[in-house]
Length: 161
Image (tube, one colour):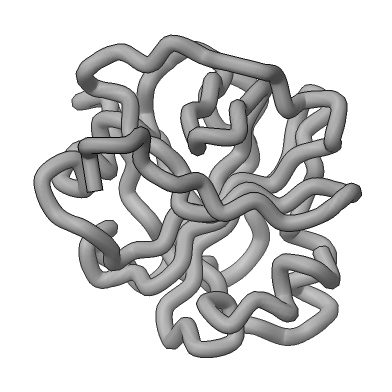
């Protein structure tokens, strides 16, 4: 998490969102709590997207083994400055695979037609970075990928900048 917290984008963020890790994901939540940062966490919505809530009180079990706030201040996704995004795999172009439900892609679909904010930062073990993932039209790419080996800032393919 040190690499993430040293990023200019992270340090400049007024509104930050993260997640509580599960199933082997890197878990940023304990480090963010230790730093006493005000962080919104995702709450899975029945309509198939995420709502972000700054927790007021303990977290509760959510769908699919997640932990999420029971109550707190809601923050609209487009009002966030930085979002730490979980992943199963990612490539150097910023494409990612999550656990397959598409919540982050649906929530941040507006990013497909406009640049940041928020800045989407994936956190991964270096072995989760694969040579190439073929994105679908609805996949929302990462802006930054942070691993135990370094920081990747994906560039758009030639002709798409």
